[in-house]
Image (cartoon, rainbow, N blue to C red; front, side, top):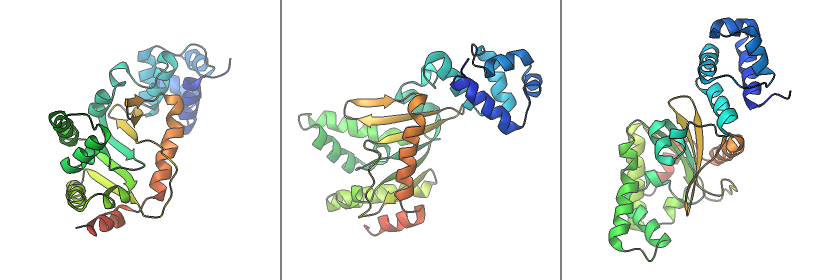
Amino acid sequence: MTPNSFAETLIRLREVAGLTQQQLAKRSNTGHSSVNRWENGKNPPKRDNAESLDKALGANGELMSAWLAATTGNGLPEWARDIEGIERAARRVTIATPALVPGMLQCPDYARAVFTAGQPDTDSAEIQRLVDLRCGRLQELAELQVTAVFPLGAVAHMPPTIRAAQTAALLSWCETGRVKVQVIPHGTLVLVPAAPLMHYRLRSGESAIVSDHADGNLVYGMESGDRLAGQITTALAAALPESLSIEALRSFT
């Protein structure tokens, strides 16, 4: 039988750990024949066995993600398939945006300008509610570490008062140690990502990639993970290092 994604992940992690099937079976309190069967792609194990294998291999949730994908069609547990569940379960996130400062790092003036432009028929009270929700999100997620990559023009091209307020907000977040900013300099063309992408690392060791669209967030399955993570890596590679990014932002103060 052709190995499935769980079988392939199990084989790779076992080989990286330098274990034979028998040694892994002993460490995980499973049977040698069972490990052999799972590696051949025959019926993934029950959850408790998958957890034992993950622990025995020191996989930090990677094998469990593969197990969830093989058994549920998605690499995330059910409770973490919406953006709020993912955010609350995450310990860090890398965000890459093609045009704007990431939402959770926007200051009120910046967020208000974005919402007003995007929703011109919405009344001011509703705009303010959205601004409050967006700008308070990172404070609610008190343990979340953020790496954000976005074009320097996302700040530079805003009106002076908004530019100054957003710059101050970004520098303030960077001083907390929770936020790392890397800006893509003027004149650098980066074709991906085409929409904001957020790569979350959950406390369980699992990961999730979410894109932000006009009609809401989309949580991707494992089959798209490598491709989308590659887009984030491409954006990071085009960005200035953190120290130079902060220096570029300070030029606006």
